[in-house]
Length: 154
Image 1 (cartoon, helix red, strand yellow):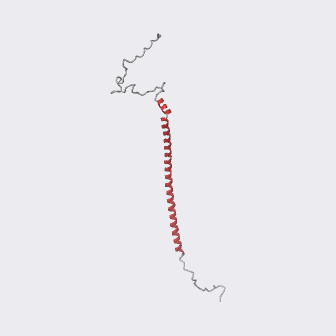
Image 2: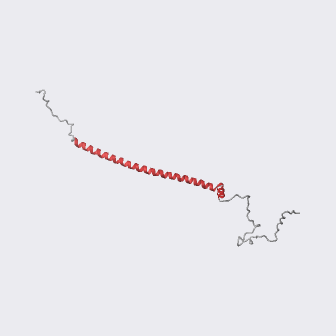
Image 3: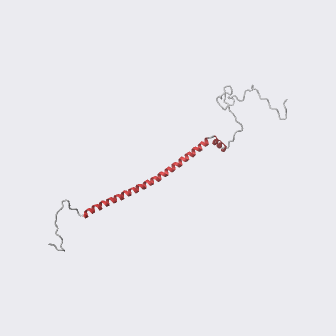
């Protein structure tokens, strides 16, 4: 019989689906160790990525500087090529001649080449006037003398 304060008797019947579990301390320890290793690994990866990013930023700054210097040199090359084109042009040559003190000629002189019947080529010394046929022989016609000032011809 049972009184109001006594618990009911237990009937122990083992269940075939139940297993004995490990102690909870050991399971918590393994999860904590894995979590710590994962956190340290994640921190190491983030630190490596930050270092890599710093290197990339520094290299990008160097690359930007080199590209700027390269652009400045191309602009200088273009400017110098334009200056060379101007100096080789007729206007540029005229400016250079004027700055050197040369003046334009009053009249145009046309030089004709030496023909076979005109002036013989020089002999041994090209600067010798006798070998070039100058002065002309005395048999050549002398030009008429110019009238004196104040007198009229005739």
